[in-house]
Image (tube, rainbow, N blue to C red):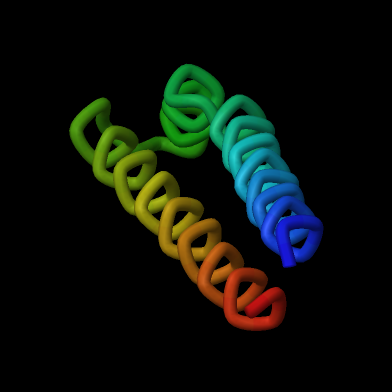
Length: 76
């Protein structure tokens, strides 16, 4: 029974690390500086660019959380 426990812990840990890596890469890829630079090139103000970044980060976090829940459910 102990080995099953350790396998489950390993699976959950691997999934948590994977989700953390995906979220980190996504946030770095869509960093505030990049989004603001692109948005300002397109004619948006700094406030509009910041709002766009906040929306993008929120979306990434929701996707990451959803992926974590789905992966955790599948592992259970």
